[in-house]
Amino acid sequence: MSQSHDWLCSSVLVELLREHPEGLSEHALLTRLQQRRYIHIDADGFHDLVKLFRMHFLLFHRLYQLRDELHARKQGTLAIHTLCIRLLPYQTGSSGVEIEDPLRAYYLDLDQLRSTTEIELESMLSRFWSALKTPISSADRQWALSLLELDEQASDQQIKQSWRRLAMRHHPDRGGDEELLKQLNQAVSLLLPRH
Image (cartoon, rainbow, N blue to C red):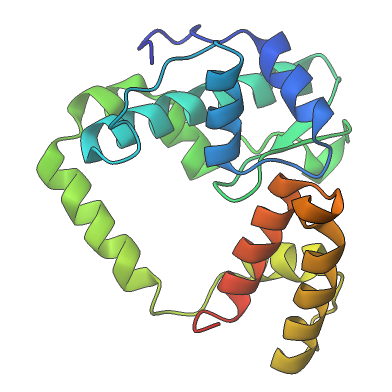
């Protein structure tokens, strides 16, 4: 993927996200961009730690730029998360761009990309795996429960039942949406890690 901050025009991302109002995972968005030949991902791009980080960083850099652009033009906003990148309607007030968002600041600073070493990446990855042993954030839990059409009080059994029901409904073999099925699987994995 190109290192330039303008490597992907806004209209391409907006078009893709409009085609998927339920949102796309980072992996799905990258895959669709590659399928449409907007980007090229090397064969080892998803397996080489440095290449994966660069690809992730550049995509999120562009997504945060796009979120700012959409908000400035009052044309919408983006919910940005590795599990679900989603185009949302414009809203004023607290739903707008958070200037003090530390993730936004990190991804908009290309020096972060240039200065991050492989050793630092390995350390980040180690911290990530350690974090998996801790409870999920309330925002991630809310996203997963919402996707599974459940409320906060849902039991493990209800989570499994809802996942099975929705997975059957959205399975590609039954004419369903493969991307939505992947998101359902991610949601149940977040809520029930040993599932």
